Image (cartoon, rainbow, N blue to C red; front, side):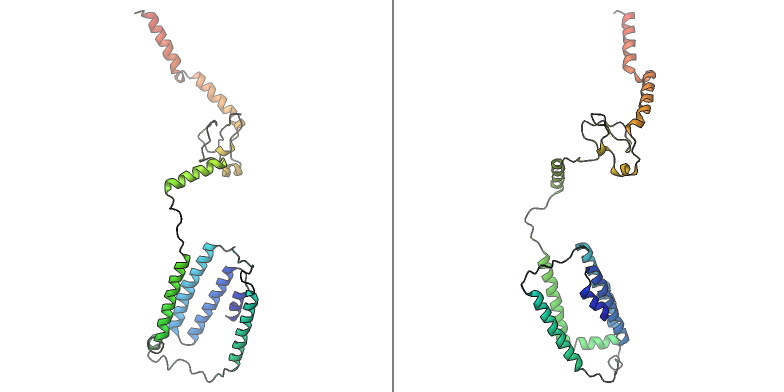
Length: 262
């Protein structure tokens, strides 16, 4: 637990610090279990490790794991002030720990005579009820303060669906991009297959008419490979009389007019 706590101070990535904090919390839960405090063990695992720490991880993932803090000091001398405060804290802790005398470990058998949860509730709502209420008020104040700090006033009206569509059309037109996957005017679509490119006015294939995934896979059909198919289809159309209804209708009308002058 001590090694994980020190690792929180020295690791550079926030996700690694959160994972080391999870190790510290689980170690604390184990200490509670060893000290015959099953309620605190459960609360430490469920509330702190399972809920609050997971919330930290979700926030880190939303903010971005690659985000790093700026090393530029916004307040002059804050680095030296931090080192001095840490040194004073270390001296106080060392002096306090050297004056501690440990007696015989009695355990919590006497305190947990009626059960761990009833004994804890008796202490919490009798001797320490003022500290408990002050802590709850502090947590509520911190939650309200966080919402006030995170709230942002809307300076512009919220965009509607029509406004978003108009903005996208305007941005695409300014950048010279296509609004959709269909070829723009002036491009000849030779087939309804997605792997067949359209032709530009100069006869070259239009790159925007075929998906980039198909182009990367090499499954796009080239215009030269379809030349023979086009010739075959053209010959079939010329040979099939049903494909020329206008010509047949014109000949029949001419013949009927010649037979019946009236």
